[in-house]
Image 1 (cartoon, rainbow, N blue to C red):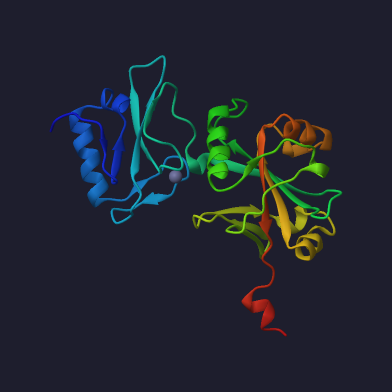
Image 2: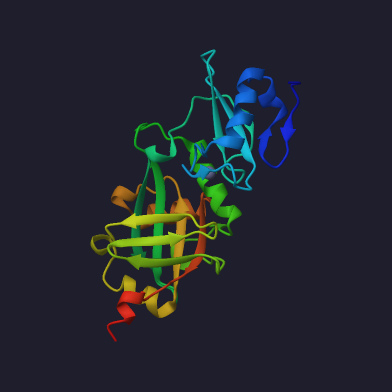
Length: 246
Ligand SMILES: [Zn+2]
């Protein structure tokens, strides 16, 4: 098989990737794309043979080693490229830290979250956090530039957020969900009422908030530095089981 960059709607091999992966590995990747489920290394989502998505071939090349690692991703998660750094934590090795706060604003219910690697403690993988933020930007989130009480964010009509059991569930337009567990213990009094009444929740994603012991001043500092993204998510209240009691 000739070694050529490939981007045919099924699988994408960037030219730089071509020079790091041998022909044998490439033909195996082509074969896998047609016949087996691949898993996006970033979000953990499956890319099935019948899916229309163009699987991206991403190569990790540890700077101090000869070894490379070939991974697959969604186009929205990471385009085909060579990354000169060790393999980041896998999707299932990320955990989500979150808080719910109220602010002085007509839309007062706020959800703030950040991602942490459960494997790489104290070793903040900033590049990966940017990827999470980038993905949210691609789905309508905007860079935050103001303190929390003054923060203006676009309304994201294709998103929704709801309370399901003890979990706040954020529905992405792509069909993905983020789950914020333990909500009843975490949300402050009045938060759920505020979300219901204003029919919106301000969602803020970023890194460096230090959410395990959140200080409002720290939150404002990160927001004003432009290191976070935000959006207004429609609140979806009620469920079929709740309405059946009426
Ligand atoms: Zn993905």
